[in-house]
Amino acid sequence: IAFASSLDQAGPMARTTRECALMLEAISGEDEWDSTSAQQPVPKWSEKISTNMKGVRVGVLKEAITDKLDKDTANTVQKSIDTLKAQGAEIVEASVPMLQYAVSIYYLIATSEASANLARYDGVRYGHRSEKAPGSLDEFYANNRSEGFGAEVKRRIMLGTYALSSGYYDAFYLKAGQVRRLMRDEYMKAFTKCDVILSPVTTSPAFKIGERVNDPLEMYLNDIFTTSTNLAGLPGMSVPAGFSAGGLPIGVQLTAKHFDEQSLFNVGEALEKSLNLEKRVPHVI
Image 1: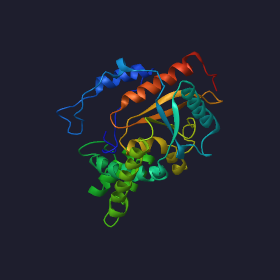
Image 2: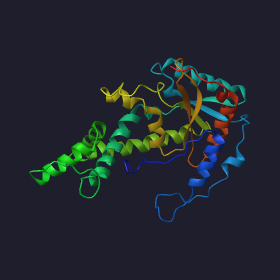
Image 3: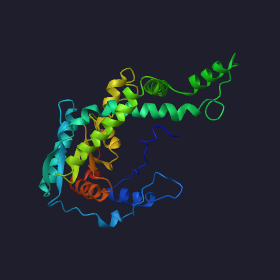
Image 4: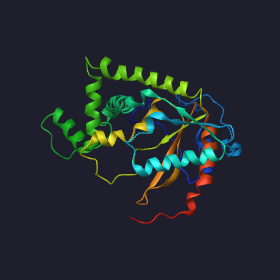
């Protein structure tokens, strides 16, 4: 189901970095039936992975290292930085000031595009059809969409519809797209000083189901590091890096320049081999 057309991206999940590279080789490449696919050759990433970190410049995202990080997450990120430094990587500071607007931009663009994409799920062409007998055509659509969508989906549709409505399109969706480009430019500037940017994946380990359902803003803010990578259209990878005191997994995010997935796999495997997490079994909560 299309959610946000300019943001939707399929990516592999695998047990190891090398397997992830193999999966990406299988799913990448130009598709003559897909105008959005890149006309780029697909390298043999899995065969070229190098764990030699000497001379590799790893940029630590300045805006991501804040007191808003969970203690276990902050410690895991620092351990990853120390691990790469010990292997010969050059640790430098990377800055993307526009990161503070990432969640706002993302949810304006994502909800606007979701509102348009989900309009087809009206119970006639696609989606749930209510068994209630409608008194009018408007009621028919209202019943179908009210029953067919959950609370979070409805919230996003309403936010998106508002952002696209007459008089607000320029102020919200169009402006978000312009700021998105500025953020991309800041990433490009950061990559002149480093090969890979390292940051947390989320601000904390996984929270309990329903724990933040009454505070959508807090829930959305947990996406700040992943949404910024997505907005800039950059390749990103989450690498397991440790566990919380409660035994929950914590990862670090690696981000590289466009079409430089090889750098992700190199640094990812270097971390994977050094941290050796598969030998640790976290205790059950």
